[in-house]
Image (cartoon, rainbow, N blue to C red; front, side, top):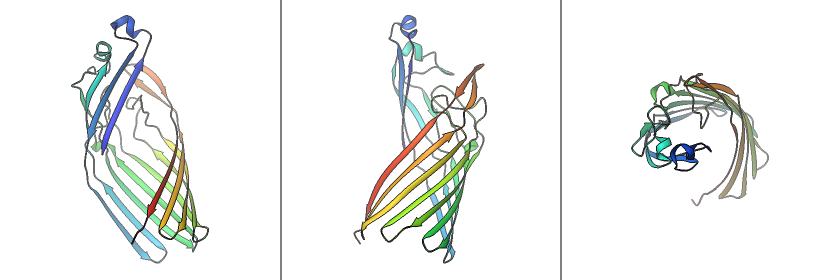
Amino acid sequence: MQGDQKLTLESPYFNAISGEGNEVSCKSFAFGVSPVFGAHVRLFEKLDLAAQLQVITKMKYEVNSVTGKKIAAQIGDNGITEDTTFHSDIPTVLNLGLGYRVIEPLYLSTSFNYYFNKSADCDSVIGTNSYDDSFEIALGADYKINDFVLVSGGFAYGKQGTTSSANNVFNPILDSFQIGFGAEIKPIKILTITAGGTWVKYFDTTYTKSGYDIDLSKKLFMFSVGASLKLF
C-alpha cells in the first residue's frame, strides 16, 4: 500500500505572524506491505461461508515538503518540519461472511468486520491518537434479472473506536450508516461491466483537543465502474 497525505491550513493571520503568506501546508509519504489470508467453504449447494484476515500494515509517514515553516513548526504536539515522521497504520482486520441462495435468482449475504485498532498506531502529522477496536456489520442482496444483468443492494452500520479525545480533525472517523447499490452487465460472454455507488451517513460528534471542543462532521458518496475480460 502506498499512502500520500497533504494537509493545508489557511488563515489571514499567518502572514502577519510569520511573513510567509497565509497558507501552511505539508506533504507526507508512506509505503507498506502485509499479507492477507482467506478461506471460502461451501457447506452445501446454497450456503457459503467465508473468512479473511488482513494483517496489520505498518505505514510510517515522512514529511517531505513544508510551506510556511515558521507557523508549521508550532502546529501539533511537536511541530511539523521536513524530518517529521509518524505512523498511520492499517490495523489488523478480521472479515467474516455468510451467503445463502434463497431462490435461483436471489442471493442474500451478511458480513461482520472487526478492526483491531489497539494493535496499530493511528496517528496523524499533528499528534498521536489512541483508538478502541471497532466493527462493521452489513446485509446485502444480489438479484439476477437474466443471463446478462445482475443488480445488488445493501446497507451497513459501522461503530468506530473513537473517543471524545481521539479523532482526526482533518479526516474525521465517525460512526456511520451506509447504503450501497450496484449492477453487473454481460453484453457478451467474455466481458463483464460493473458499476456501483455508496452513500454514507456519518453521525456528528464533538472532538476535544487541548481543551477546545470541535464539532466534527463528514459526508461521502462514492461511485465506481469496472470491466473484466475473460480470454480463456
